[in-house]
Length: 173
Image (cartoon, rainbow, N blue to C red; front, side, top):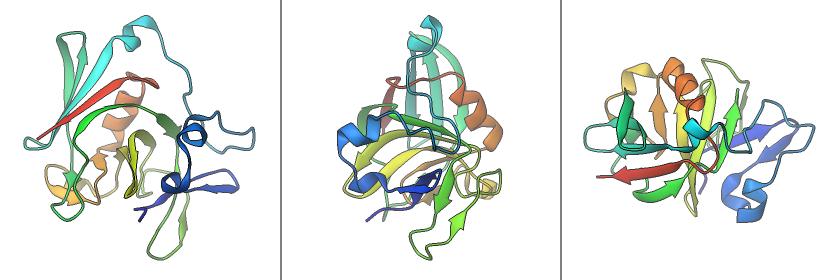
């Protein structure tokens, strides 16, 4: 079961149905939005993320130094955010989202369910999980999502500039 589909250009990409090789492949030239597919500068390469589900905060470290933290919404008990060690595997600016419930396609922007950025860190049988912006800001600080990590749009835009493909992500209880 996928909790949504990120659309890249005219193609619908349902990550839950893609192989690992397809998920990390460079998007075609018809892709709408821009994905980061290579590691950033050395300082970004040293960054790592720790998501604390209990405190509902995402911490950005450079080495052992805490750079900043962000309030987030996490998955509910029925649709939990996956726990464990991951890496950032896909990054999309201005993602297009298709509702798995209605099939409606939502154009990118601050009022889209995915907000202004998508930073994927896990793909399982249940779907793809990542950090993303949200227009549902009242959910931040709560267990309210279908497993993804909701952030204020300005926070996910700032985070997007501080991580790259391969950035380690630890999700702890």
